[in-house]
Amino acid sequence: MLDTASLQDTQQHQSITILGATGSIGTSTLNVIAMHPKRYSVYAISGHSQLHKLAKIAEQFAPQVIAVNNQEDALTLASLLPHDSTINICCGEQGLIDIASHKHVDTVMSAIVGAAGLLPTLAAVKAGKKVLLANKESLVMSGELFMDAVKTYKATLIPIDSEHNAIFQCLPTNYEYANPNASGISHLLLTASGGPFREAMPDELKNVTPDQACAHPNWDMGRKISVDSASMMNKGLEFIEAKWLFGIHEDNIKVVIHPQSTIHSMVQYKDGSVLAQMGNPDMRTPIAHALAYPQRIESGVEALNFFEQANFTFEAPEPERFPNLFLAMRASRLGQAATTALNAANEIAVEAFLAEQICFTDIFMVNQAVVEQMHSPTLNSIEDILSHDANCRALASEMVNTIISEATQC
Ligand code: NAD
Ligand code: MG
Image (cartoon, rainbow, N blue to C red; front, side, top):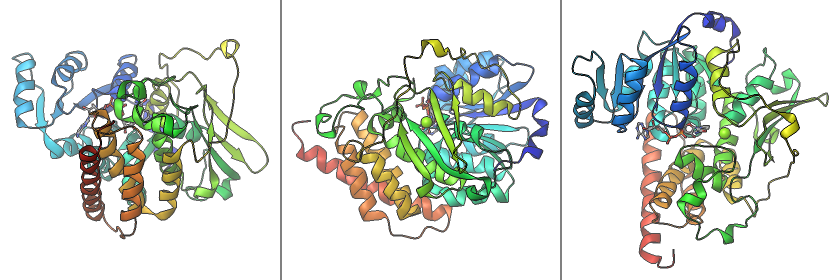
């Protein structure tokens, strides 16, 4: 993954596609890019059906292409752009694939939420781009195939997830992928804030609302990842993400609850050293790091003031308190079909929770049942992954419908 030689040209101007430009990560990326207009330009943006936002971004960043959901949205977006606009509008999955792999693009920010990010991100990988990976779901869905493609197509993959970006910064520059022992590494320490319900037991959470679940104490994020953070599924997905990104066995990854979210993660070495990456919790830091790597640029994030930090605390996660985290760790050991199933079930369950169709605690029930039933197939290709994903979504949707028809107290 880490090929410093191929990154020597990053001083030169970079032309960027931002998949998911209208979201939380997309907005932070645009904020960093706006601070460095000579260094970065935006080739293309996507934003599904957030057309007004896309038109506004286009006014400021003048991309050459915008990708939207469908033909109807393309027509509406065209009517929102100046009548003499030369911006090309494309649509659908193929539109996302095209802007991710276009020959004029150097760097792709993968910031679509969920499984919808998989094929466009993979297209960027197969085109050998520098890929800044926020879309953790693509690795959870297809870890080994994804990482094989990174290697085969000589793409450069830099993690954006703050924990993984922190680990990336704490690894030796000559880190040998999938051989942590050779680099003297004993464990990756993945920190977790514990989310808004850190001190509650699961049975106290039945009636929490989507707004309560989305009110993260330290981070401002999109709604799906906010719910994942509240359920600790986010940390579970990140556990699986870390395994694939760094080629490290589950036994060598530990989750550490650190409610202050100042240490973004750590690497523990065999000699007793622990390297940590710290900073204020603001995604512009990992985004700026990844955009400029191996250099450093301004991100707009305030410097960390140690004298304002009350304290740093650390706790071990307990299975009774964070069942989704431990389910994800189990799925990771079960293998690819289990993590693909987990991701699919979780996306369906979170969507139903955000639509107030099921309770917060039902998310775990759906996730667990789908993993238990769907962990055995062998998945050898992306087609296998997509077909398994569809089957798991169908099962999860069936379960959600059963919960809806049976529940009266939610
Ligand atoms: P968000 O909901 O704010 O934005 C999601 C983006 O994806 C939007 O641009 C939206 O238009 C687009 N999108 C949604 N559904 C789509 C579909 N079906 N097809 C195409 N585009 C679609 O989400 P976010 O918080 O920016 O998160 C984006 C990704 O980054 C997620 O995978 C998340 O786990 C990861 N991530 C986010 C943060 C954070 O701080 N927000 C931190 C780490 C990782
Ligand atoms: Mg994270």
